[in-house]
Length: 465
Image 1 (cartoon, rainbow, N blue to C red):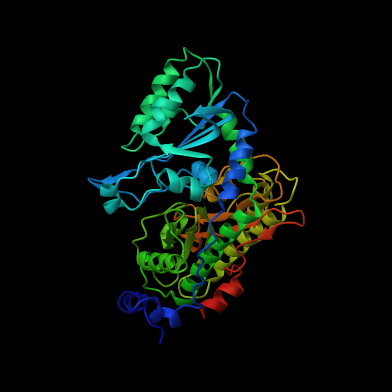
Image 2 (cartoon, one colour; image 1 turned 135 degrees about the vertical axis):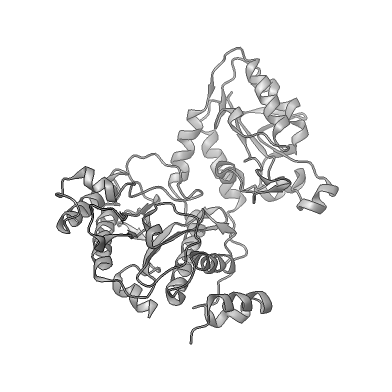
């Protein structure tokens, strides 16, 4: 008899992960030294700086800390752009790039990282800070100085009306907190003193969109590990779930596998929608108890060293699709295959969506759910989102929305969502199906990075048996 999820997790708490080893398909692979190298981040800074005029300066602010309630903060997540350029996950950090160099303490430098000063009293509570020496040693930045020196170094540069200034976003769009408030205030005052001189926020965005869109081999190692962890979580749910499990129990197992395998956190709120919740695109409540005959849409992504996976599977909670569920599932799967086939170098970003949407419309018309394969309004009733987005440091990552290029990773995720409605045959009510995989664009054709997660009806039903 299969041990329940509750019993499995109790064992994990009482005896540690080793006690649960027999319950999970494989022992987790542990990675220790696979963070991106300081040379990687240096190459990214150099790539950005190469797009700036010699006398220009560019500023990148850390993400703010955010209060959850009273004196409790949300788990900190660094700005993806600053993480990409420095590898620093420390709040209160600011990066300055100056291709032509600026003089600090008699030394001409082209990059400065402003870091919070070491504070033994605070570090007892919140953990060790980099400090200037460790920041230069571990992050490989040319110069690190304490953030208290920001006002004396940066505003004089910004007040020069003929010096081009580049901000990734308007400085006041970064929420102020205790770490960044002095730097933001100093920046705002200096920009107002420029007397209306232009500040460019578009060049950096275009540059980073292009750079982050095309993954390097180093990045692909981390992204693939995030995807492998996520695929394993899907497999564990398929092998254990039964009718009567609550959605939050499924979520608990998924995120247990994430953590057990080395993921720092989910890349986004896990979506576990059963029955009538399967037709809600971004359902996140996860409180309903599953019932026999339900399908469950599970849209999840582990984050690993900043890179997020995004894989969706739809499963029958009792292990076997009904004929009607299977009919809808096969249409979505056929549409996904068409979308993946269109994920080729030179095609436009929207080509997978166009290919998948045509298959969905044809299938829905064949079942009599829309008038014809050309009924776009009917299609939008049951398929109301795009098929693809970029994937990387953000689950909805940045990109150019232009032609697909080698090294780009996108999702292909068509779906059909049929809510209970009086003008629809009840046989179709509350059947929501989404199938999502992570696809690497290569010169040899699309590569499905998430193939380890079963996606055909036969594969899913076999694993659930």
